[in-house]
Amino acid sequence: VNFSLSPMYTKLLSKGLLPEVAADILVQAQNQIDPTKINQAQYLETWIGKYILNSVPVVAGGFEQFHLFLGTSGCGKTSSMVKLASQLVLQHKKRVALISTDTIKVGADQQMKIFSEILNLPFISIRTPSDWNKIIPHLGQVDHVLVDFASLGLRSQDEINYIKKMMPPIYDSMRTHLVLSAKNHDKNQLETIQKYEALNITDLIITSLDEATQYGSIYNIVRKQSKPLFGFGIGPKVPEDFERATPERVLDLLLELTQPSRQQES
Image (cartoon, rainbow, N blue to C red; front, side, top):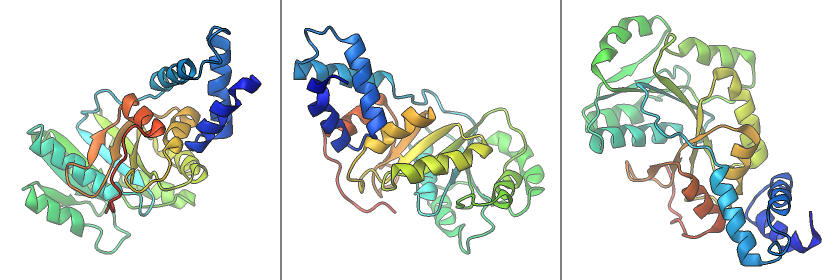
């Protein structure tokens, strides 16, 4: 990379971008920008902004009937599911059912059961794979079925097999979200994505934006894993603090155009 670009390289690192990701952006800039303009800081920043916008994959539709929520303990998985359910009901007037397949954590159903009562939604607890056969004939009456799974680190093949076993039978209209916390380091997030690859993840939900100090990890993840972003958890309120992901929002977070409030996300 051109030595004159080192201040920009340092700036990108300060935003939390990995060295190889920052270097790649500047190599692209060097190759594509007119040499007479490369040293103009404002021009370079504008080019990088456009480059980031064009390289952030997001889910455009995402209105499949089945939405599966996977993730490790403390990632904000259940709260993301409840927020999305609330938005679908209150803002889009959709019929939604909530399902829990978590047979491991004691009391895992309680939070969802409470919200299902508040929103007057059907709530079903799946205890064995055969339970799916009993309820699937009745799910044609709802627009969206949101399914919560046990929070596991997938440290063994047994854990992967357990999640697979509890998934609904092959379904045409299904989306599988992996929920990650923005508070975790890149290395942890990338390792989690690699482990969950075995479960055919279709996209990512990033939570705890209100508690993170840097947002470069969001861009690092999509550059290294090529998984589209579905949504962001930005705070504790239901349903307000869940938003659909856009490239503009990622750029906004990276360049700190707005400051998110630092409230605790449940």
